[in-house]
Image (tube, rainbow over all chains, first blue to last red; front, side, top):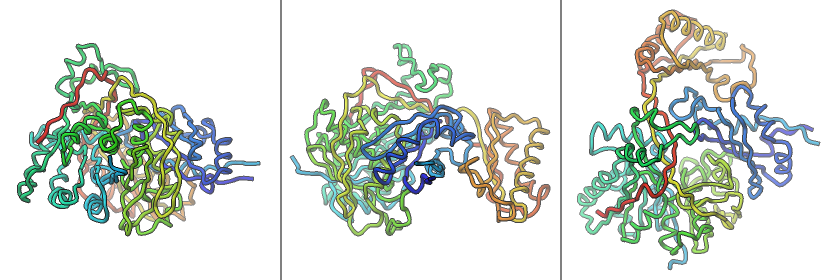
Length: 104
Length: 453
C-alpha cells in the first residue's frame, strides 16, 4: 500500500548557509514508525535529485515524532549569493511531503 | 523571586508586522517584550547605512515604535529587550532617549551592550593567532579581508542580564543571539547560574520558539493551515516561564492564530542542524530532550529540557561584498505559455553570448510551473497552462555585464515571442552580492561591554 507523506506528516524547512534543513513531523505514533523506517537519508537524497547536490544528513527527534534532514549544497550558494527564487528553501518541506512511501 | 514571568515576542525579523509589539503590550499582561531584528545579511545592510551616515546602522523602526509604547511600558513596568541596535546600538539608544524626552518621560534607563562589533579589530585578532577560518570551507579570512563589510560576535544572554541587574527599562544590543533575548529575563528573575545547563537550555528552547514571531502561533503552518482562525489578527507567541525551567507557550486571548503541539513542533525543527547539539553562547541544548504537552486553549507546556556546558568559542558572523547580481521577469500567456517562455530564455541567452558578457551564473526559472519544486513538480500539459512567469537571474564579478543584462529584458517584448506582459518598474539595477562568512573566536578575545544611558 502506498501512502502520501503529506497525509501522515507535516513539517517546516529553512536555510543554513547553502544547506536546507527540512524537519518532518508525524501526526501520530504510527506515522512516526513509518517515517523512521522508510525516510532514510538515501531515500531523501534520491527524492531531491536535481535539487540537492550534496550529502543528506538525518537526525531523529522521537520526543516530537520528528526527523530532521540537512540537505547540503542545495540552495545555489545560500544567502544573497543564491539566484534561486526560493533561495532559503522555504518550500522544500512541501516538496518532501510529495513523496509516496510503500508500506506493508 | 517571581512565581512566573511572561515574555512576549514582538518581531520575528526586521520587516515583520509593525503593530505586533504594540498589541503584545496592550492586549494582555506581559513582563518582557523581546524583539529580534537581525538576520545574517541584516548586519551588512546596517553597516552600509552607517558608512553613509554615522548616526544610522540600527533598526530605525525602533524609535517610531517607542513613540507608541514608551508610556505604556513605563506604566505597566514592562521591560523591552532587542538586538535592533545592529552595528550602532548607542545611536539607537540615543534616538530612544530623544523620544522619551519628547514624551516627557523621565527616569528612563537604557542598557546598551557593546563589544560584539570586531570589524575594526580584525588585524589585531588575526595577529593574535585566531585566523577566523570559514567554518564551512576552512579558508582563512585573509583571502577576503579587503572586501569585509561587517564582522560581529554573537553574544548570549548574560550581558543582557547585567543590564537588567542595573535596572535598565530597555536593553538594546548589537549582535546577540535570538535565543539570548528570551533567556536573559529568566536568568535575571529566577537567579539561574552559569552552570545551570538544563535551565539555560530550557530558556534557550523557549527563545527558539519565540524568535520567529508568529511562526510558532499559527503562521507559516504546514499542517492543517486552513483551520487556523483569524490569521489577519494573528497573536504573537508568549512564553510563560517558571523558575524550574518549565515554560508554557501561549498568546493573548482575543487574538487570531493558534498555539498547539503541531504549531510549536514545526517551529522547534525550523533551521536546526543536529538536534542533540543546539549550540549557543550560553549552553548546548539537547532538542531531543524537549517534552511538549498540549494543554488546550492555546497553551503548550515545554519541559524536561536537558543541556550541556557552553563551548569555549563565540560564533562570528562576517559579511563581505563579492559580486553583483540582478533578476528580471516577464509573463507569457496561453497558448503555449511555457514554450514561449522557454524560447524567450533561449533568445536572451543567445544575445548575452553575442555581447561577450561575463557571468558566473545565469539561472532561469519558470514561475507557475516548477520554480519551487524543480523536477518534483507535476508535469502539466501545455494546453492546461494559463500563464508562466519567466524569471532570469544573473551573477557576475563584472558590474557592466550585470548592468547590460538589465537592458536586455524589456526588448524581448517587441523582439521575441508574443502575448507577453508584466515588465514594470524599469530596468533591473545590479545589486551587490553580500556573502556570509561564519567563523569561531575564542571567548577570551572578546568582552561584552555594558553602557547605561
